[in-house]
Image 1 (cartoon, rainbow, N blue to C red):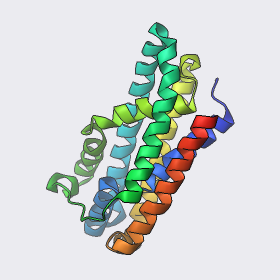
Image 2: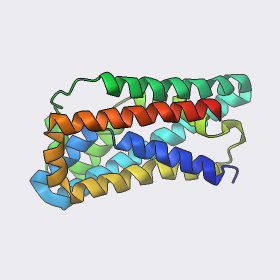
Image 3: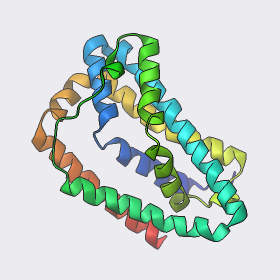
Length: 206
């Protein structure tokens, strides 16, 4: 395995920060939790994990192909990662708090419905692979990755959000109140935005 503990640690921290940014997955988890409790919410978390792993692995395989033809392009993608994190941080700092609406299919009852809803949230967004392609070169030397490295990174991309979503499922009532408070959501956005900008700075100087 070529990835180092520090690379894994920094990437894990970035995944955690991105998870802490409230969005449709958070609200879908809470909506399913309020309707069906933990049993209604955990299948959605599993579906999201499958989607995250699929996009991360697809991005790494794509980047490996790019590296085999033009290694210099992967180097410059590091600065794309810097731009992505800084842009996300600035966007969060400037964002207005609005009500998040979800399509009804994300909250249909049933285990299979929850699983497919989670996959739909991630795989239904083609921007996800562009996001992973943009940030992964900032954390790892893509051209040097082995299959075991790709498996570890894909597993992390699935495991950390999955554990976070399970925690949401267990405390959906408290998180629901938090998401309904514009003041608290604004604070979360500001704190997460500042930290994302800092992560972009760390990638730039590393």
